[in-house]
Amino acid sequence: MLIKTKKEIPASEITPAYVYKNRREFLMGSANIALGAGALGAGLISPTALAQADGLRARAPAEINLAAKPDWLVDKVSSRSDAPANGPYNTEEALTPFQDATNYNNFFEFGNGKGDPANRAQDFKIDPWSVEIAGEVNKPGNYNLEDILQPHALEERVYRMRCVEAFSMVIPWIGFPLADLINRFEPNANARFIEFETLYDPEQMPGQAARTSSLGWPYREGLRMDEAMHPLTILAVGMYDDILPAQNGAPLRLVVPWKYGYKSIKSIVRINFRQDMPNTAWNDYASNEYGFYSNVNPQISHPRWSQATERRLPSGLFDRRIPTQLFNGYAEEVAHLYEGMDLRTYF
Image (tube, rainbow, N blue to C red; front, top):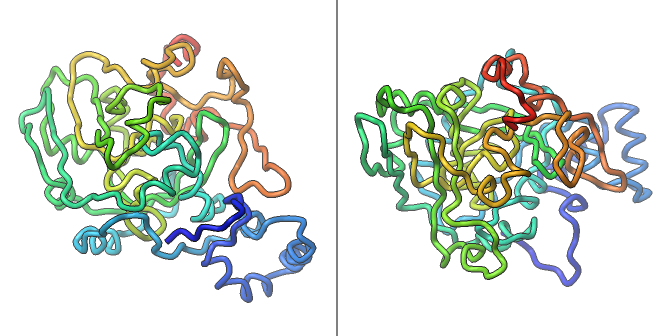
């Protein structure tokens, strides 16, 4: 539920419910936390910034912007397991507060403003939902979401997310490896790329009907087959112990943590296996700014800003600028995919 006020309050200044409920325990932790609480009382830093600084990893309440939450999907998400604690599937960095992760979004189908997705996705419907599997596969067809998900065990993975606009988050996703779905539908030898499409529904997604929109609809993204099969690449159906909110891509989205966030396409309705490289929405819009690969790379600036550092949300009185890592910190796992490639040409 969103509460409207006369004065718009920045998301970074709103205390999430789970921070408030843990405040007593939070303030009793250590001398450092006590010092932080003093600064909080003086109004020098925001509650969410303080929680982030001290690594509070509390979970968010189930306040999800959806017209309905299918019971079967809620049950499946709640029964998920945790990914192994060691290895690339869980960063030890503090989680981004739920309020920031769900109220500071790029989802242009709902509008160009960061708050538009949360404000305009209140009645978004995900039931019924189907996904078309098409192209170079042995088992094409239209499958309802429950059939898509039924065979797959879900697990939680805590990934860094780096936006091309140079802000970043740390999000606990709930999903399963895309490779598992690919293997189910048996791509043939011609399948070298995978193309994804977002729902096109201007009545539910007012950004698609806006005259000011510059993107072509439906939103399209793509991966090379080896990128899609990589174990870090997942299809997510949940985050923060619940199903995906509408503004974060309900009910099914891609998560590719070593690429800029716009590659992780939301609200997927079509997965098409292709022999040739597919066109993608942002590459079609400005090919000199948004390449097909879109790997996080601090050494290659966007034409209008540097990518050397990023602003880690939440931001309070002071922006938290941190160095950006090559492949968003996942180079050990994915750099071999691009061996011999000129990353300035194939950006």
